[in-house]
Length: 421
Length: 167
Ligand code: SF4
Image (cartoon, rainbow over all chains, first blue to last red; front, side, top):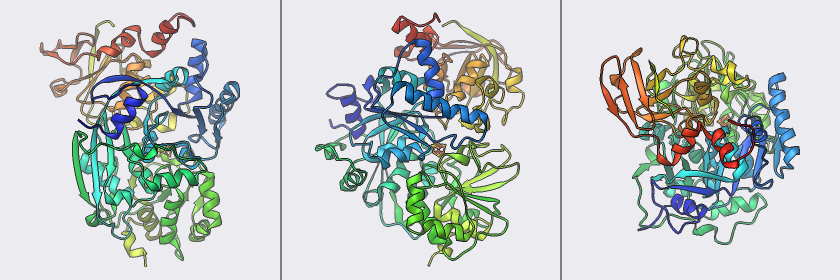
C-alpha cells in the first residue's frame, strides 16, 4: 500500500520505514521558527525555569514580525526579549523586522522538500508549498521543540484537493481558498491537505503559498504541494541548492487518502468572505455595493510582491475613493524594495495608499491600522473572526488583492473584473 | 488527574482564538488577557467563572491562531475541562500542555448552561448531576496521559529533565 507525501516525511522524521494515519510518533525537527509573539517571550522564561538551552542554534530561526515596529513600552519589551534571546543563544538566523516569518523562510531558501518543520504560528502551514511538512504550534509546545528538537504527532490522514482548468480574469489562489473554506469547512483538524492538479502545477510559488497558508483555515495539520521544477527554481532563486533527491518527495500513485476532491477553476468567480468567518464566503456579486471604510493589503497570505502587482493592476491611474483609507503593508522589506524598484509602489501611492511597515500589523490587531466600532474593512488577510482586526464591533470582509483594490477604488465591495482592461 | 466538578458554561460552534484571546490584549500580561477571555460572546464569563467550571461547546473549539493565551487563559481562570463536539488542533495541543483537559463530547447539546457536572478526564466519564444523566467519552489519549497527570508539559519536562525548581 502506498504512502502520501505527508506520511513519507513523518516516517523519515520518526526514523521509521513507514507510518500509518492514527499512529503516534515522535519526530526529529529539521527546522523550527519562533516569532516575537509566542517565541522568546514565552519560551525563554520556561527554559530558565528548567535550566536548559536551545537544542540547535543553527536550526532554530527567530523572526520578529508580529509586534514590529514597537508602538509602546510593552511591544518594545517583547521585541527586546527576542533580541536578547538571540544574543544569549547565539542564534544563527535572526530576522529582526525584515518581514513576516512565513515569507522570510521562503525568501531566504530555508525550506527544502522532505523537511519536517515546526513554526510557532498557525500559518506555518505555508511552508508546505515547498513540499515539506510544516505545522503550527503554540509557545508552550515550541518550548519543548526549542529544548529537545523533537515533537510528537499523530500521523494525519491526508485529504487530496485537485484543481483543474484555467482561472477567469482576476481569479487567483486566494479565491480558491475562500471557496474551499466554505466547501470543505474549517473543521478538518488532525488531517493534512495535499493540493494538486494542473491549476496548482501552473501556479507560482507565491500563489502555492496562499493555498498552504490557508490550509490553516481549513483546520489542517499541514498543507502540502508535491515539489516540481517550479519549486526547485524558487530554491535556487533564493540562493540555495535543492537536495539532489528533492523531487522524490511525492505521494505514491496508490497512496490512501481520507478523501479526494476535484474542482474546476474555470467556473470560479472572485470570492469574498463576509464577517465573521472565512467559511462565510461566496461570489463577489453577493456582496457588491457594501460600503467600506478601510481596505487592507497586508499579511503573510496577501502582501507578497505578486499581491502588490495585482493591486497595482487595478489601481493604475485610479484614486482610492474619498471616504476610504487604503493601507498597504508589504509582507517583507524585500517585497517593499522590489515593489519600489519595479514601480508598483508608485502606482499604489499615486492612488492614495498609505504605506505601512512590513509585519503583521493590523492583520491581528497588533500594529497600525486597527478598526474601530462599527467600521467595515475589506482585507487580503486570511481570517476575519470577530475582533481579529481590532474592535469586536467591526466587520471584516476577505478577498484577493484584486478584489480589495477594486473595493478601495469603488468605495464599496466591487467586482475587480470591472476595473481591469 | 483528579475529577473535575463545576458548573457548565455553554458556548456555540467555532469559538475561535480571537474570542478566547483577543488580539488587542496579546501584548498584555497573561492575567490581564485572561480577564478578556470570551468577552465578545459572554461579558460575564471571565468575571464569574469559578474554579472547576466546565466549558461545553460545539464544533471546532479554539479554531484559529497558535496563540497559547487562548488555552492559557482557561488555565488561569481555573476552568476544569472543555467538552466540545470537536477541537481545533493547535488549541487542543496547547490546552493539554497547560493541563486543561479537552474531551470530545458529541452529546454536548444535552448540557444546559448552569448544569452541575462531574468530569473524569482519565476515565472518560461525564456526569450531569442536574439531569442525572451519565456519558462515556474517549479518555485523554494514552500517550498524553503521563503529561496530563503530571499537570502539563512544564511539570512533565521538569520531571523528565530531573532539574529546575519543584513543580
Ligand atoms: S500576517 Fe497575520 S496571519 Fe500572517 S503571521 Fe502575521 S498575524 Fe498571522
